[in-house]
Image (tube, rainbow, N blue to C red):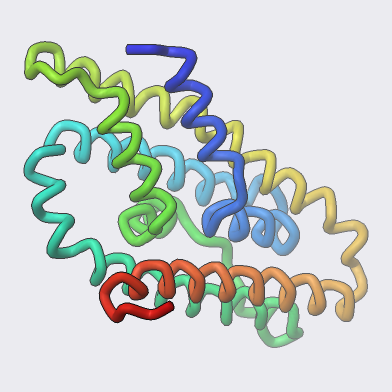
Length: 205
């Protein structure tokens, strides 16, 4: 297994903007780095479990995904739109009183609805799993370990950066604008992902 290529791939896919990182930046702003830790661990370990299962069952999973890829992607985009709304409303006084950071289980489960996570784990499984059945378990475990170890520090940058912004967003008006902006960006991401998934099916231009 080309270790450097794998490390580079996981690091690049983990640190670039996406639904997970947008949520972590917002959680860092609204709740701080420490309270965002379960969210980060849920992403990293959830993604590691996802890549292990996909890598071990790749042949069967690819056939299954042909049928279920679109419903899963649409469900993930709808969930992202709901998260965008809750994020935008977190800047309101009543929203801040009710807001809670996403927990470990919720973050881990979200990876199965996250279109970017699916792209990441499927590509990694195809590119870095051995063609022969011999050693496939060890290779899948190594792949999962690399995802967990490399992903966590990469996504932590977003939560840490969000926390550092907190002192600049002490005024309720500034926090509201930030949360509305991040919610809008996440909604735009969800709509773009949904458009990208539906375009081949509906023949949109």
